[in-house]
Image 1 (spheres, rainbow, N blue to C red):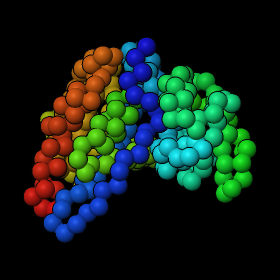
Image 2 (cartoon, rainbow, N blue to C red):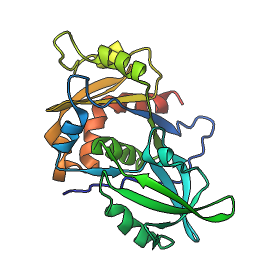
Image 3 (cartoon, one colour):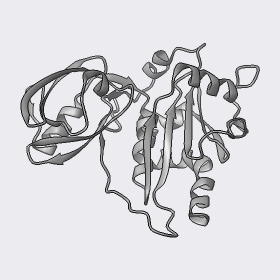
Length: 250
């Protein structure tokens, strides 16, 4: 099974904006899952690439892993993990060594449980059981691929059921087909840095309001095809105009 990327995102160096500087170029990535007439877990289960999902970002510090971000609606948030926690062990394995931590995360299996031992506010030995989630690998790959580009940063956004339903209604035509050409126009009143992804059985729709829309075959972003270059190529028609505008109008 291809585990393209660890479910835990490593923090990037901060970017400082200056006058006339387009940086940082931000992206709010919305995983809209699949339309209600399709079962998202079945779609993800059919992929070659399976991603265990915790939903946190950390930095390596002396003594463990310092939690820098906890994503909304993530297993980490459900378990009670907080920004500033120091993870010292996972399933009894000391993770003060970054290589050992990477090995633990690489062995995660969606649906299993892991026990995190943390230090919080100077109190050591707190234990947090955490169920490993199952996330769309393209979303995780996109968050990481965007973050590798100069002065770009991406965050994962959780939408309410009502918000998701309203968004999806604008992204499909009356025959339940993707609006591959003009979904970005239908969503034109959304926030300028919003990036939306919807998955179906054969294709994914990626759209950025006011800027662009692309439909990508599922096989083009799965298994050995799920590389950083492939993700950036899929995002290009959607985000390039936005990025250029940020440079032209910082």
